[in-house]
Image (cartoon, rainbow, N blue to C red; front, top):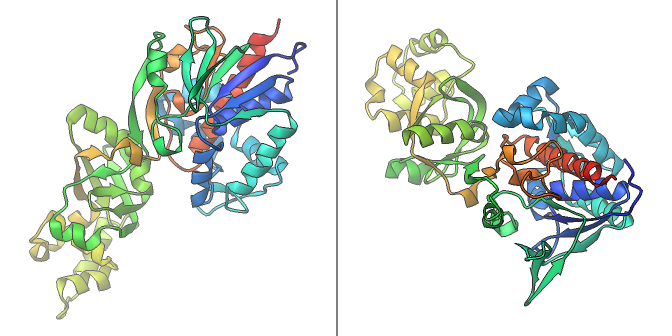
Length: 406
C-alpha cells in the first residue's frame, strides 16, 4: 500500500511490534521515527534470544490460533494476515533460515537474536527510519503534541499518526514497565490491570523439600487443572513451581486463584502408563529394597518424584499398591499465588480490545494506534508471543496507512 503524501508517523516503543510496524510503514513511504526510553532498541527481543529465540510455532494453524485464548477472535484477522509461514519467510528475507525443533517450535538456525536484529536494524536504516533512544514518553501537551523526556529536557513532537507499542509490565528492567497506563486512563481509555502470565506460582513446601530440591526439574510429567492438561516438565523453586508445563497453564491457574483464592493442580508422574500398568509393576516382589529403591527400579521414578510423594503423604511408604498407584497418577498441589509480575515472562491485561477499532486505532483518541503486548491479550510461550506482537504490529501499521489515505 503506497500513500501519495509523505506522512510522518511516530512509533513509541522499539520492541518487535514497534519495529515491524515501522518497517511496514516505511516500506509504504511514510517518514517513521521510533522513540524508546532505553539506550538501545529491542532489549526484550534480545533477552528472548538467550533461550534460542523461539520465533513462532509450526503446529496446524487452526490449532495455533486457539492459543490466543479469549482474544483469538479479535486477533484472528491480524494473525491471518501474518501467519507463522509469513514469519519464517520474513526471517529468510533477513538472511536467517529457520528450522523446526522436536517440540514443533521454530528457531533461527543461528539460535540467537542478535544476528537477526542487526540485519533488521540495518534494513530499517536503509528505509530511512529514524531512532530516538533515551526518550521516555510522558503523554501529550495541551496542544495535543507528544511529550518526551530526554535527559534533563522535555521535547514535544507533532506527528500525523502515533503508534503505541510500549509492551506490558513483565520486564521493567528492559523497558516494559507499564508506566504508560496512567497516561491512557487519564484519557478515559479502559486499561485492564496487569497480571503475571507465563509465570511461576507459590507453593508452601516443607523446609526439607525446599532445601533439598529447589532448582531441580521434574521431567516427563503431565500437569492438570480442571479439564486442562499439558505434558512437559516443571521446575521446583524454593518458593514454588515454574517451567514449561506451568507456563502453559498459567492463565487458567491465575484465573482460578482470582476466583477462589487458591488453585489445586494434579501431577501425573507417569503419564505414559495406565493405572493398571503401574499397579502391575508395584505388585512384583519388592525383595529387600527400600521404598525409594523399589520405586526407582520398578517405575524409574527420580528421587525428586519420590520426595514429592512423601511431601504429599508422609506415610506413603506404607500405602497399599492401589493407593500408591493412585497418588503417582495424581499428586495434588495446592497453589497459593502467582510469582510477582517482574518475574513473569509476559503479562496479561492492558488496553481493552474494545477500545480499538478495526484499524487498531483507539476509539477515543483519533490518530493514536496501539499494538503488541500493551493490548489485553495473552498467549503461552512457544513462539506465540512474538507472532502476536509481529502480527498486531503489522495490522496497526496497515490501519494507519488506511487512515492516512485521503
